Length: 173
Image (cartoon, rainbow, N blue to C red; front, top):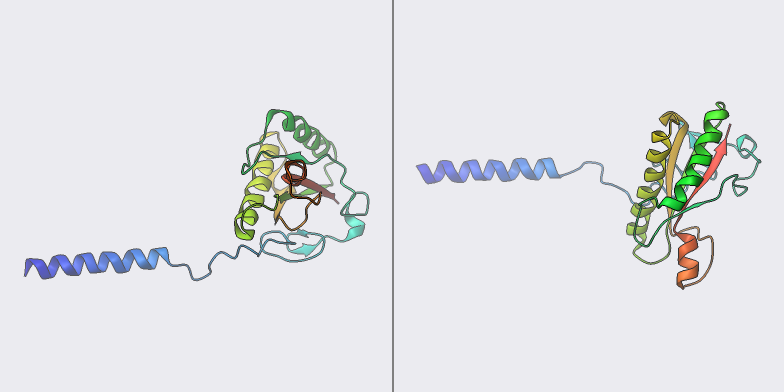
């Protein structure tokens, strides 16, 4: 009788842990490519609404106002030299209260597509957290991951890879 109760308890525990571990909506590593928080589009999103090219500062997604922040291999740590770039972005956002920013996290082409999408997201989120720490309101900062999909430089060497491990800024009204 005691063994039967133990087997029932263990069985229920296994079923319960399996139910907790299952997700009805599994993570889609491709969901953030080209959009923010799983949305898709050409220019990013503001609360799910497409940000038109006209609303971007400079009118062109590729006309970034700020220098990209670069990362070490397989890292989302913000290095000392890159912090000054983020301080410049934060100062601009604190002065220009009517603009917001989308941070795009990028990777080099080493690693799987899924891994690079996740790493690009971690890089964008690290930059976001740093800007929030500098006093920028969280609701003015959005992130998205590009993974390895939009390299800044073509090539399969350290010089190219170093330029592709980055976070870029899109400032919009």
